[in-house]
Length: 176
Image (cartoon, rainbow, N blue to C red; front, top):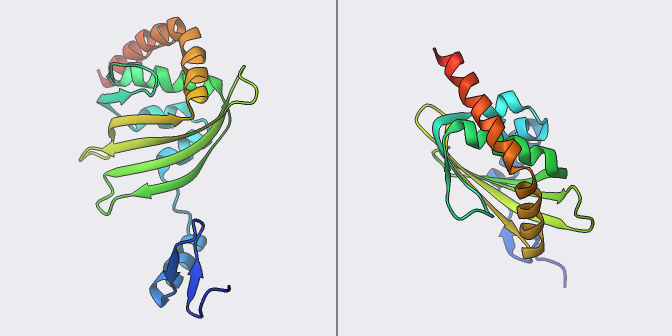
């Protein structure tokens, strides 16, 4: 049965009422790019831009590690490692709170060396008063994807630790 006039059916079958405001917002969103700068940096694989958005005291919570990682150097090195293993990475949705401090970026990707494994995940970002990411949590599904991610990241963790030490030195030099 078709939807009644003035109502349209959403992706999950939920009915939404059409309104002038909704139409204006939709049109404005199509006319103006509303991609978050972090999303743009990741999609462009711009490591320098990603690093510039991290607070010195950022806390990174991995979907495959028990303990969070604290600090810009280790977080930047982990994200660098992720860029090496993700294939066909793309964000599919952005969700932001009204004050602009919290963002959820839903993504899809494949893992290098894990044929047939497709991951859906979400980057949960909190921004401090300076506009820098101070809390970064990642969740992924399904379990087979989390397992493949854990194995791929584990295989390069020695390199990630070396890069974190190098980045700590680079960041210290840049500040001093």
